[in-house]
Image (tube, rainbow, N blue to C red; front, side, top):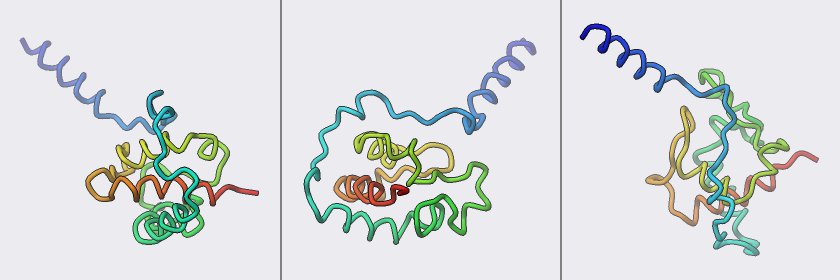
Length: 129
């Protein structure tokens, strides 16, 4: 009985460990999502407003993962202009913004669907030259 409780406790601890070392990949269906703001020149402008109100404190003003709150996080926020981020589809970015992971909050209940898509478009403007 005690052994079972200890094994169950160890299992729960393992499940709760931060997955910081694992790459964060959106599920395949995220890549197939239809972007309702595709081709809308105002999408990135809208996304910039959302970014400046919520995201910059962790991701930094230029989206490089160097915001003032980044120093207290266990996992450094993503550099949104980096190749690994920029290579993701808008659907994958939207999915990550929607669901979050670890210290990256889920914005499904915070932001409208349109604002989350607009953020994906704004992230495109942060690509490093």
